[in-house]
Length: 251
Image 1 (spheres, one colour):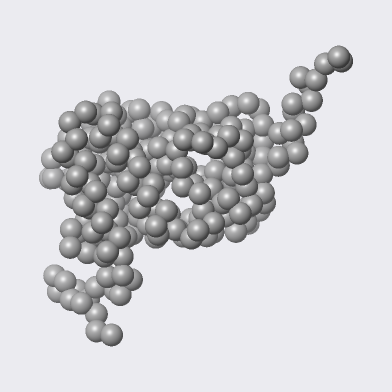
Image 2: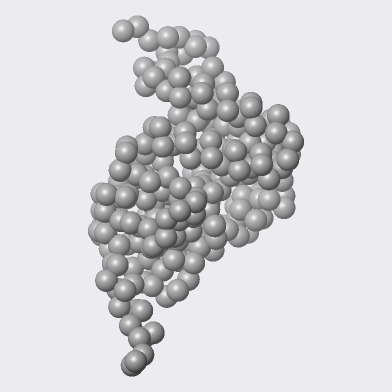
């Protein structure tokens, strides 16, 4: 099979294979622009992202809205997208909104219609609070290394627009999403602009024909899920249940 050539570069086959899913997702994005009510528009966009990931991720992964709680009773902020392996874990509560153990959470995404300075600060706070959870009664780490009992989370900000102009957009966006030296957010994707790896300070510009940055985001999520989930045991549900024993009283 011959590879398609775009802007002087050979386009990998796997990028072309994502074309239909990306085209469908882009159509839904354009449709949400016609929704006037801000709350309704936000809900539609969050749903579209969850559906987009559900179509492309292996079926064992649950992609829902919700929050995580740890054995100390700490809970994360509400996240527009949380991903966990439903073949080894289950939610404490499952409906329109999921509550899962901190040990089950793998990936989370916060969706923004438009990034500005105030929203960027909120994103940092949410991501920082999320990574203050203690799965397995331990601190979240950035790099696991050779340790097998450590936990990592992958957190993404997905924005449909930004108030930063196109000149040096990636550098300025990275600066405000790492304000004060924060490392809580891993990646940020801005529609029509591209994908920024905040840890490495690298950017992949978006190409609206191939959707290369959106494809790269999907593969970053998928690769993290494959690596991190493979080293995780099921959540310690017995420990959560044991903590409830203190509420029993003699009848």
